[in-house]
Length: 350
Image (cartoon, rainbow, N blue to C red; front, side):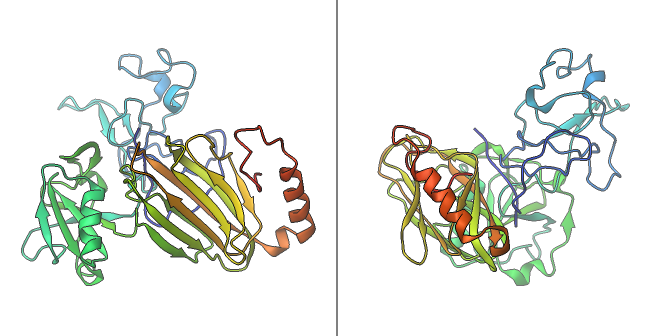
């Protein structure tokens, strides 16, 4: 299963219908879950217009063959990824060269921590710190390599090369189109690792085992995301969104199989356990937790690793939720039957 989203991802509520919809964020590496409305091959509208999926009967993917909305196909011409390619794409009018489809450069459909695609002439290099090559390179492999060496940014290039750098490097970097970083990673065919003379740059904080979050909204990823988390993980993240009396969570991804691998949510003041999830107890669609400081702790044993999680959070101001309503909501959830697997360890589901 492939997972994603990009740097500084903001929490967005789910929306239905394509008409007037704000493009949804992606939480899968290859954008297979993209249900936004972009219908050109570049976001500024200067790219080629996409053909409607109900008018592409001569091609492999169309609404005649898939009439029930599979993969987000329908009577529209928005970019989708029905075949599990490396990113969303669409059919276009066939060119003289025989090109009849193209990738869509969707800003909200990049790997977590994605900064951008940049030109790299090599003299000087786009990122001037440590570097190396690997036949098993993935984005997270490069991120870990650079994080351990104290760098802020990691860059992948030509499918196999990893470069590290600082903010000073990016001041002089020359941006390139995201679709120019189109070479798959040698270690993971579902990820893109730059291109020929093109370097894809990422923030090394993604997949970190700890962190402090003070923005009003954002996303927390499991360690080593989007790769599987490792054995014997012991990680924690602290949320202190300003001006809030509660924190709303939505799990975009929860892929934990081992019942001994556990994610705990605690009140940051009292350390009271608010919710707990593992391979046998999955979170519901939404949580509203009555604290202005929330601590997430994740521990894994040596067995059966998996993808992990991506959880979007959003601060809830005091004016939107009174203490009385908190008390009522908690009491209602505490009265839920203990035998309910999806709720037995949950005190704040909404």
